[in-house]
Image 1 (cartoon, one colour):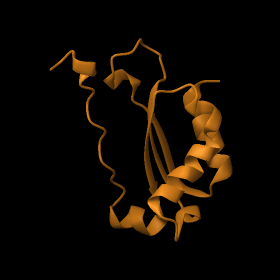
Image 2 (image 1 turned 90 degrees about the vertical axis):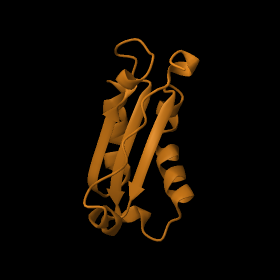
Image 3 (image 1 turned 180 degrees about the vertical axis):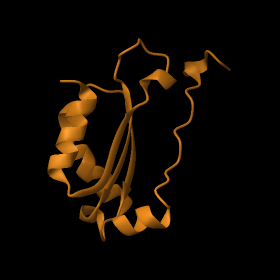
Length: 104
């Protein structure tokens, strides 16, 4: 099973999601094709209600404990349904990789 699929399955089974998107952003970084090293997760769940951002991230990180040992980066967007609707379903784009000093 791919790391992306494992992330999707674990989050879907742990949280009651209104929306879940797991994007492999490895192609934006200086890694080999198929590396599955950089991910962006957007998760909308009532489980985040009344939780500070750090608590939300800790909940996700705990769920993905095994996967975090295998990847380099995980960008998290953890929202309640109300926050998601207020943003009209939009989250920030991840910045392009600067290449670890290669493109400076």
